[in-house]
Length: 93
Image 1: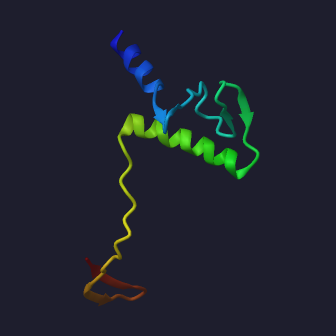
Image 2: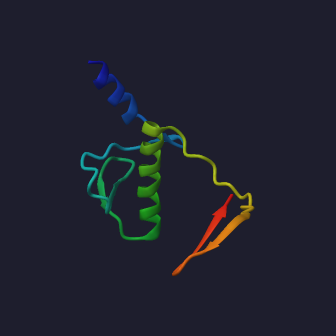
């Protein structure tokens, strides 16, 4: 019974202010459900963006929020180089 309550609360995931629809078949990605629950075929980039937003909302509901994208440049440093017969091995941090 608790599992069903959890699944029902997961189904109520929200995207902004509107509720995210629950998709019965997770293998079919080329359609989305509109605000009335009607099945619509993905035909435009905007349709695909809506479907991706639904996917992300359900993923975050299950896995937790995705980390923020970092804009910090990487500062790679080479600590050691070793030339081998067919390749160069570098130790980086």
